[in-house]
Length: 127
Image (cartoon, rainbow, N blue to C red; front, side, top):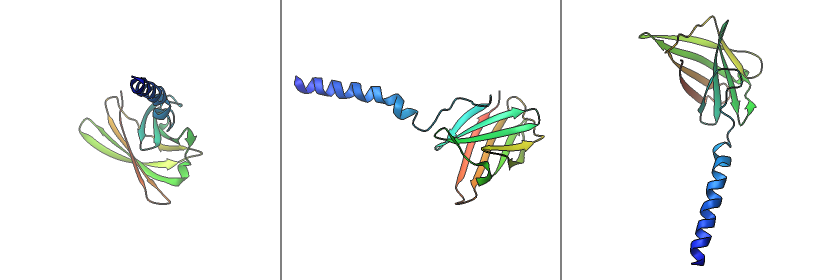
């Protein structure tokens, strides 16, 4: 009977610790008013801005330097697929100037780390 109490206590502690483990890689709440997804440990936020599309990168709630990445956006809408280069801006922002993404489009953010060539892909469906 004592063993059952110990097992129950351990199970309770494990469940209590679950939210801490689940949020260990950073917040997935939009910081810039866009839509957010995670790719591995990288949080990618896509923002449709008046002058184009902005992508923000963070990892464990810390900004990742956009200058460390080359990238493109692949937009599929109305049966057509288009690719647009992302240009690194200040801090953790990459931009596709002049790009307009229509509602219902599927967007893939494709990034390559300049240092080690690691690839990051993030998919979005724009509402």
